[in-house]
Image (cartoon, rainbow, N blue to C red; front, side, top):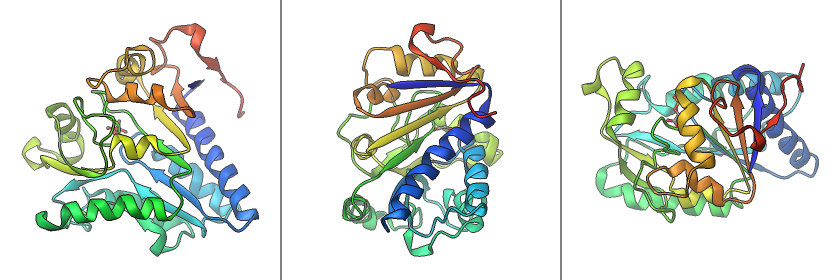
Length: 259
Ligand code: PGA
């Protein structure tokens, strides 16, 4: 596991965007698609800003295929609370990605169609050759995607029930807790761990404890972030605050690499 600590969210996000851009450039040069697993929430916002600039500067995203980690359920795509809305607002509408290459779990599915939808989501990822780079945030309770504490390592894309911690954290977006959905559709842990390369980002003091538990703690279903320890190619991208509780011997300091 590679743990990189940056001065702040902006420089860490720029690094993450550059890793993605390098992969896209390499694949573009041999006319191949780049398959990205994408995250929402407050963590990747600056990464999307940096990717938009990279796209404007001439790196084409016309051959990227994207799979989002999750979506609330039930949720209308047009709702400003949906992750569909978030992705178009923060990223897709600003770049040259093709509409048909965008995959996001559909919160408008009827309940009885969900398991078929989830199966198809998994198959679609596989048909496109698997995810090259999976971007992740880390929940305050250690969830990755919406895989909450207690989820097993072999879970696939499915409908999930959100924990109280997760619903409380979402109040800042929904205004009232009663408005936060109780369920979501999420890629599974196994889906996430199938990616070739995982980049997990976390910022700020409030993530310091769960970052430490995820990276240095015992592998445990109580902290899904610890499952990342089992993957052979993980980059953890932190700012000074989120890294503040880590054992210093384990981290590379790249404070001014990008300036
Ligand atoms: P955040 O959420 O980016 O809004 O902090 C991270 C997560 O819940 O995975």
